[in-house]
Image (cartoon, rainbow, N blue to C red; front, side, top):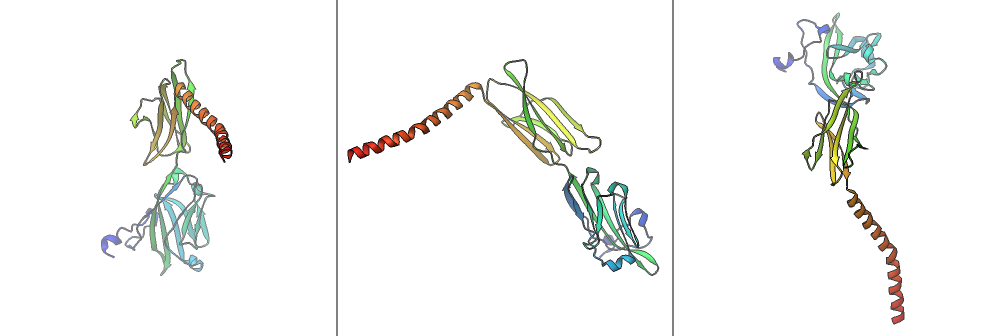
Length: 261
């Protein structure tokens, strides 16, 4: 390994041992959703017996997450009761019930006791991305005073990052009204809602499209005029009537055939 690669392996601020530099593995990336569980590997395997001679630290963006030292294990308050280390699985850290605040770069540091002091044995990094997926939006309709105008509302909640809502018809963007985006101060999850007014005298097919980050979710609302609805109902009724009549035609044809014979 050349000097440039070696010197990429910086110590964490509170673990600096001046003048010493060791090789480390490259950073990997994991993507999970809110409330899921994540397992991030330290990529370092030791036996239970070796625990007496090593220190293991997991931290996120320079903040401590957990530590394992001879005779002691500690989990920091933000991760209490939902974070553990799997010694038998490459010193992996396990975090349950993921939150948006868990996003960040995690470093695993292994120090080994040699010649009277602890020296850096291993360092690896994992970048965790946490997503919150918006459920498919719902569209509800309501009456407004004008007899020819109808209002529909599209809404969804519980997603991240910040959403952008669009109303479309035949791929053309429409002018919405009362579009609101709000964020829960505790969970940091977003809610979005928007209204659209349209004329009921013609047929429509509207798409409520929500973009957030590189993801999208949508819902479609179809409207047919009363005349179109009545025509469709008549076609359905005529179809049912033909189904009821067809057995009579078949029996009549059978009788005529017998008479001919």
